[in-house]
Amino acid sequence: MLKKLMFSTALSAVMVTAAWAQTSTPPSSSSPAPATPQISGKPSQASGKMNFVSSQKPDQWLATKFKGTDVLGADNQKIGDVSDILFDKSGKVEAFVISVGGFLGVGSKEVAIAPSSFDVVPGQNGSADKLKLAATKDELKQAQNFARYEPPKASTTTGSGMGGTRPSSPPPAGR
Image 1 (cartoon, helix red, strand yellow):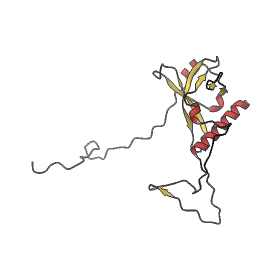
Image 2 (image 1 turned 135 degrees about the vertical axis):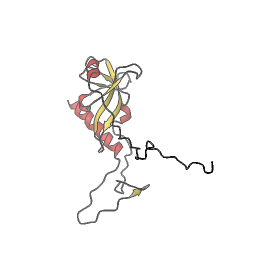
Image 3 (image 1 turned 180 degrees about the vertical axis):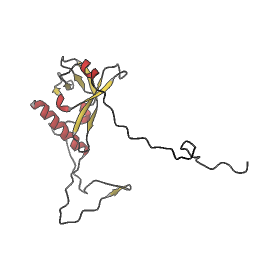
């Protein structure tokens, strides 16, 4: 249990550091709010002060360490690998997206599982660490598919009767 807590905490810290390598201090109530800096016409959320992280600490992990990591089942057999990591705007890791089944990526499905569900299994003889679940490959194959967010597509209908398209230039004159 302590291992899971340390893993989740360390990974969350890494994601927060990587995603938001700056801090913002709330303005005091007695001073006016600073103007929001603009970069290429869009407001920036930066507070004007940047805090650089100079190095990784031993208890921190990079997201790249886990992408592609083998996931072991309850029987210590490989059941998939980490295909992506889902985190929120604050940098908190919400889930590891696991690719399960298939062969060379064909016919596989993705399921998302909370980091607290995993144990880190240290690699042996210099091999990479692995993640372990208390589940089987069949259980993951039966789990609900992870659906990636798809932003709504822009509507192109204008009511002009032309199917929403307009000519890019006027037709040639004089013919």
